Image 1 (cartoon, rainbow, N blue to C red):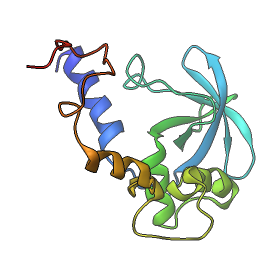
Image 2: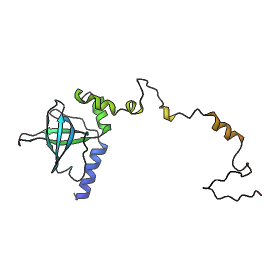
Image 3: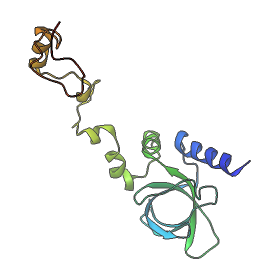
Image 4: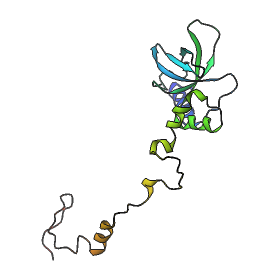
Length: 168
């Protein structure tokens, strides 16, 4: 497998697949980058340590501060206690939360990722979002009924439209 094919495969896997944590996996939040593909993370129990990024993610996936990752604990090493298994995006976080496998420590951050929290909806679940409904301005509908631009005597000029000012 060529390098570009491998990068494309890893990117598609991270972006398009939902990951479900298995037994022994730890969900953690990235607190910062330490350099040399090492990241400082805070796990679900509140412990802060360093996790390494495997070579399959290097130069392919970038991790930001505050993003969530799935870790696999490793025994060797003193400071590095885990390896990043999967990088979670917002959709994946909400998927894990819907499966009731999301840790309670990060529940507040997961709630902020929901659609209701982003839109500012308070417990009101309607089928259609407010921004999807037509506007309630009745002035625009009255203007449409009066006539079109062609019917008017061209007193207003649209700078984006090339039209002769004389009517035939």
